[in-house]
Length: 300
Ligand code: UTP
Image (cartoon, rainbow, N blue to C red; front, side, top):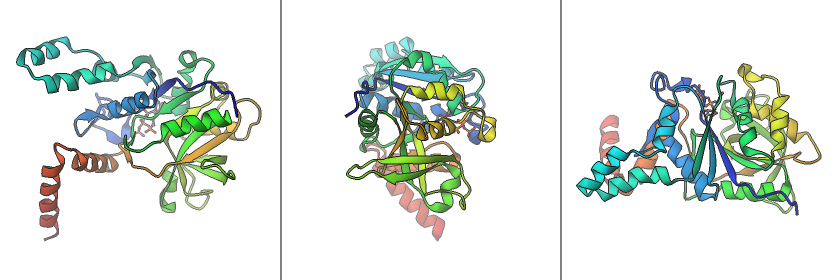
């Protein structure tokens, strides 16, 4: 058993330009796009807090003020709701301000996910930490982050979350070449490739936006040259760690089979909103009924 310290801090990179969502993201971060009745980023912060990670560092940039405002108090609105006796809305507004202890640092130039994670070096210090991407939502009914933290504690390395995708889709993701570990429900990652061609992909296991990383990743990122798209890729740094022994070496994978919603591009965002709205207690019954009638009319 490894004596790795407990994971206490979560890093949420949210400094990307969101070009796939232009023009919606011209003046607003894509992480603020509403999913049912909350911005996407609130689901991610809630997930970190539910896993026991109260200390959250958000990596932000230009045009990202709305993120800080969302997790701050709004005294005038709160007083108004209180005066009206609208307790439900008041609780909903205040909920976001009571989630964890959120810190912010700017990335400056968005030079890639690896570069964004490196901005967390001072805040994280000498301990393992979690990274949660704001455009990947994991259903709160399914467990992932806690399992990944357990694997990190056990192995002392870094841990990625993997999903099985249709082989034709693998070039949209980072891809992992893995080997099973006897008696364990996690795998060893031999190699990671960012967005391989379908023919070159070593598997159909795609990396999704949850990581639990050993702090050694910071030193590796400092020496990682820009890769695909001219950006400093986290996948490239993890590839270095996968091939490395010694303290903090080794990358492991947890294959996630639960519900995940991708909100990073327009079509998958729309699917996420429809799926989660249909499952919503308050809105679901009416929406499902309407959707049934609407789709029937489309196929008439
Ligand atoms: P994406 O690859 O989705 O990039 O980043 P993006 O810029 O947000 O979106 P598109 O592709 O232009 O539409 C994955 C995650 O990494 C963060 C993003 O905010 C997102 O959560 N990121 C990416 C940064 O924080 N900084 C970067 O330089 C790049």
